[in-house]
Image (cartoon, rainbow, N blue to C red):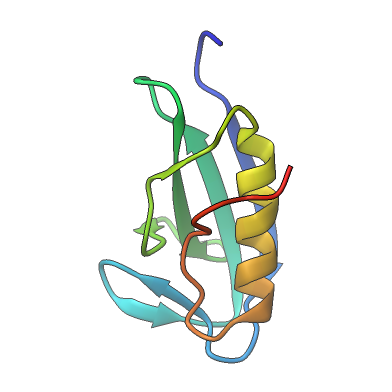
Length: 94
């Protein structure tokens, strides 16, 4: 795969929010962004408060994508929706 791929979606964090490296737990309406890394095989997952400028690293990111980075993005969305200080998925189904 050549070039960088990126997925970006709005998500409402579940109870307990999403855990970030920079500021700890964030809650409420968020934007989740997943970006493939240039070295291949891994993605970076970041979150921000809806309509904010600052992005935060979802704890546990970057993670391997095993050939399907979109599946990692979907798994991260599900984790943030569930809340409980959600972290980057270790393995995505797919």
